[in-house]
Amino acid sequence: MKTFIARYGTAVAGLAVLIFLMLFAKNFATSTNLLNVLKHASFLTILSVGFTFALINSELDLSFASVCSLAAVVTGGLIHGGLAWPLAAVTGLLVGTAAGYANGLLVTVLKVPSLIATLGAGAIANGLAFMMTGGVAFVGRWNDAFLALARGKVAGVPALILFMATVLLVAWFVTKRTRIGVHMLATGEAQEAAHRAGIATMRMKRIGLTVSGLCAGITAVLLVANLSSAAPQMAGDFLMHGIAAVLLGMTMFEPGRPNIAGTFVGALVISVLANGLVLLGAPYYLQDIMLGLIVIGSVSVSASVLKKAAFSV
Image (tube, rainbow, N blue to C red; front, side):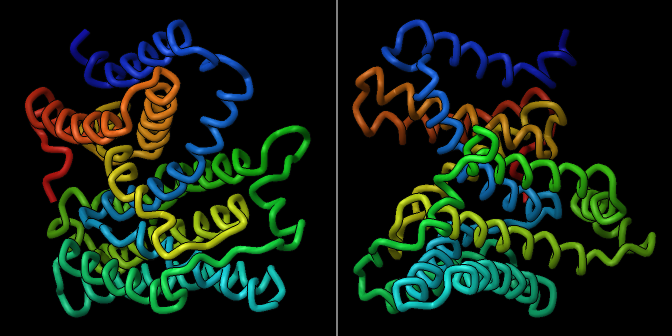
């Protein structure tokens, strides 16, 4: 029973929250609302998967939200300026990937702690986004094919959900079925031992942080397509939400360890809770309070029950 609670207790609690909201939150259980929850969770999930890759290597990426906003501004600005949307979207992806790789170089080559490096990188990305926009969002009537990336459907399934599922499947495969995934895990859990065993630990860290940047770029393109706008702080709220999703995920399935399945469920729980609180008529600030409790609670559970801090890097 103790093992079951350690592995699945948080997921069961999340299911209990879902049932409660379905019973007591008006219109929560409608198909339209549940679909909206999944679509909103898509952005959070993709960003959180990127952060998970960084954390698997025992590194932090506190820049992913700002990098996402910068990539969104670049994408939106190029489309607004008349560039073909496929080129603009690819540029947005490259901006996110380049930012993640730069973080990796700061951590592995210049030996700057990832906490400091990514905080600084996030500040730079935020400043660049404001410099490019002057604080004003790019808006307009953009190409329907571009908007379909986030608003379209494939065989009746929203494109956003398909993007999320693809990212999750690829991430799970890489972490569980490839040598890179095994080496990343070894690097995060015992870097010195992994290095002595011949694993290129610095390379693994660079890959992890680069993937985090790539996921920020993917989310940026989808956000712009979904909102038809690009603002310098459009992804700002995702920072704490993404961290909370990963920490919550570390209390289930593979307790004390960053894992893709846990991250997905954590993102779903946070999205469901946010939506449910709105429908219950809860004051807006209650969401921030609940988010803080989730972060503290997830770390406390891992530290006290699992004897391993979920956020010890």
